[in-house]
View 1 (cartoon, rainbow, N blue to C red):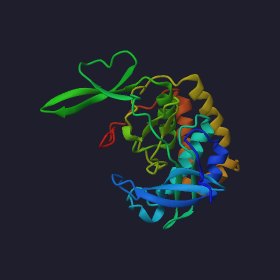
View 2: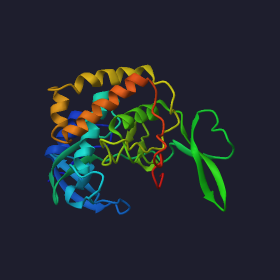
View 3: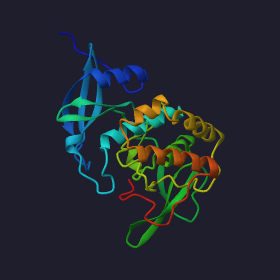
Length: 275
C-alpha cells in the first residue's frame, strides 16, 4: 500500500482542506500539554492524501462560568466562519465533526515561522518605527520594558476581527505567521460573549480610525449577518440567538464609531499570561 501524500500547510485550497478535515480519518499522534483544555495533534487522511490538524474534543473542555451556553469547539468554528466572511483568511480551516472522544473541532495545523517577529520588549518610552505600543511589562528585578507589537496590516485586520468576535483571550502565542507571509490566528474558544470581554495584545491602534478595507469588510458583514442569510443560518447552529444579536451590535458599533475600540477600564485589557 503506497504511503499517503503529505499536504503541506498552504498548498491546499480552502475547499479541499475543509473536505479533508470533515471527511478524513483522524489518528491521534500526541497531546499539546501546555493547553488548558484537551488539544490533540492528529493526522487526517482521505483518498490517499494526508495532512495534520489540531483536534479539540468537547469532552476535554473545562466548563466556564461566564460561557454557560454552547462549547469552545462551536465558538472556534464560528470564529472561522466570521474570518471567512471578512475575506481576510485569518483563521485556519476549521470544522465541527465527530472524531476521537466524540464531537469536537478539527483545525488545519499551521507551522509558524520562528524567524517572524510580531511582538517585542523595548527599553524607553517610545515603540520605535514600525511598532505600536501595548503597555509596560515587568521583566524581572524590578525592571519594566515597553511591550510592543508590529505595525503590521495583517495584525490590524486581526484586531478588527477580534473586536467583532469579542475575543477574550488574544495572546501572543495565538499568532502564527508563516514563511510565505500569511498570518493565521488560533484559539478562539473564548469569544462571542454577549458582554464586552475584549482582552488582547493588539491595542496599538486603539482609538485610531479604521482603515478603508476594514470599513468595507464590516459593511459587507452587516449584509451576511442579516436574518435568513446563509451565514446567519450557519451561526445559529453554533451560537445562541442572544450571541448573534450581540455580534450584529458590535459590527454596527464599530461602523458608527469608525475607530478601533479602546480598553473599557473595567477589567484587565491584556490577557494573562500575555504570550
